[in-house]
Image (cartoon, rainbow, N blue to C red; front, side):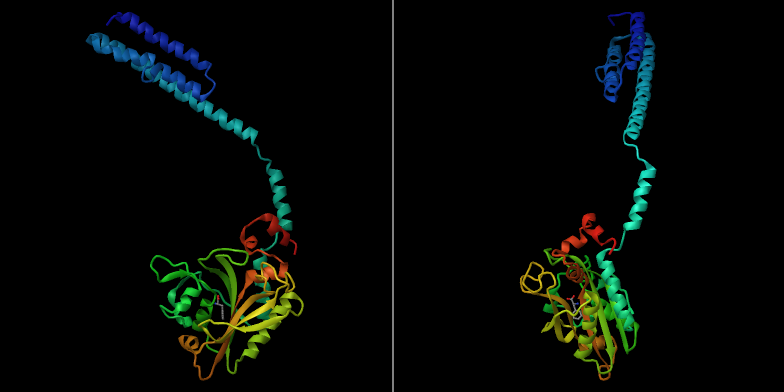
Length: 354
Ligand code: PHE
């Protein structure tokens, strides 16, 4: 070793004191880290001394090694404390700069409580439920996650039936479970629950794996209706649907019935209403045709009744699946279904006091 033992020990003590002094003026975490590196980093002043011990005697090694380790430990501990202190200061500063007036927040919340309201789809769903329950219909629920049987099979859509392609399905990996593509699953569940005569409606979300546009969403809402009794005919179906639409729109609306194909009804129809957005002149919602498909419906196919263990020689039924989002669009003249689910408060809050 070129320097003698005493000189090296003095140097270590000097570094130790020097570090303490310099640390006092380190005001940021970066400065503390730089300082620490200057003394005990890879090529730091203390580290270099330790590296130089290779050529020292055993006694020198013991003495200098001890001192430099103490010095290193002290520097590391002091750096750690300084970093923690700076971290605290930073948190306190942030808290001070971004303080929240809790009483102010509460006042906003109570104001919101006064002006908040239901989502328009919830409102229309309840309205439709009320209209039907006043006519003696029960209200049923069903799960979103369904099996092949309730969504297809029991609705007269066997495997490999081309009608399965009518509804793009979100399948689970096992390919037997799915997110229900329509509330017609509730028809199947209703028949499992009741023996005829019965009538019920079943509202809820449905899911379709398809591209969105002004009149399509991949999550939307339907309300299914089903009535099974003796002597049910298309006249009963039209009667209930006309009552529903005139109650909802508070006026007589123009409707038309067209043939429609659904494997679970025979005959099947599409009930259209004259577009209330453009009055029939043509717009994006009615695809410039003046009419909007609102209620697919029909008389329940005998195969469906048979799956439901209903005696088709005695009973008949009608069923419909009303699109609730479309109904909202018609009622409030909204020309893009995507607005309904975007969660934009500027849109949603317009319904707050309705
Ligand atoms: N489930 C059909 C659909 O979502 C609608 C429907 C319901 C048609 C009941 C007829 C009877 O497209």
